[in-house]
Length: 146
Image (cartoon, rainbow, N blue to C red; front, top):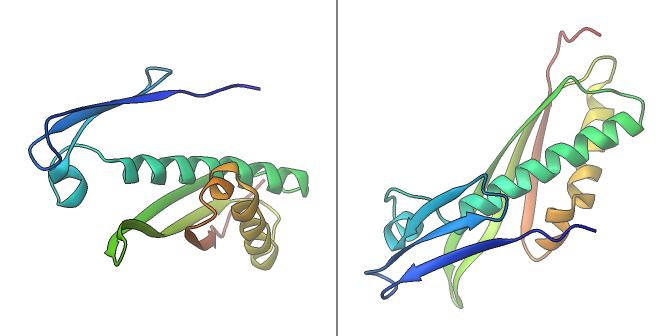
């Protein structure tokens, strides 16, 4: 099975420092800092990357689950809002809100939502984030034709 890699480099102290994060494939490299993580400064942060990983993983798991149930999706779009809050024990990812919209011909909304919830539970990134509450809003785009 594949092993994925990533690396980070940080220089100086927490508040005065900065760094870069890079994924092993070379597809992404971004700068990050205290301001980009704890405030609204420019750059990326680990929480954004976790959000992207969760949205991407869920979208693939959902597409697969729909296909296995006989409903071939045309498109799945998912966004993630990662809540990064200071609680009594320090900074914590307290919640991830997924919002997904799918174009899936011939499926009813109830089935669409049930399969989405199951995919959320079985996506490998969701499993890795088991200590974090993950909420899902799933919307079936209407008027989709085969």
